[in-house]
Length: 119
Image 1 (cartoon, rainbow, N blue to C red):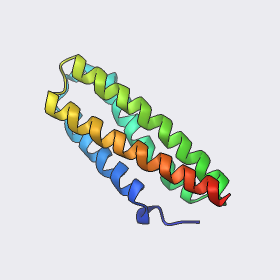
Image 2 (cartoon, rainbow, N blue to C red; image 1 turned 90 degrees about the horizontal axis):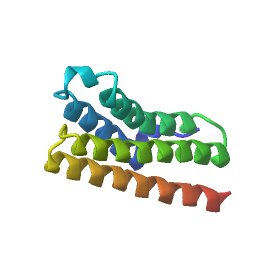
Image 3 (cartoon, helix red, strand yellow; image 1 turned 45 degrees about the vertical axis):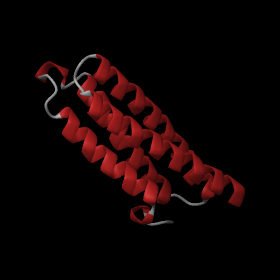
Image 4 (cartoon, rainbow, N blue to C red; image 1 turned 60 degrees about the vertical axis):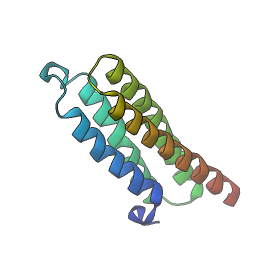
């Protein structure tokens, strides 16, 4: 069992979640259960799956939860693009969130490779 708070990828994804909540706060009220909910759910799923994986036994289970987190990050990457194209996110917000999502995905990919190598 690992302490998820010690992982840089968890910290980065937690900060990304906070940024997404802040960015989606001014979205139209009628999108609360639409794109706002989708973005918040997919984003918060990233650090939540990292935390859950850290509570499991062994690298194989941890790697599986990291893969789930990767899927959520890819989903969020699309929702950020969609929100931008719908005019809900500025160019600057889109660029910042996209950059951060890609960074998290790179960190997850690296961590997954390390876990698989440690076997």
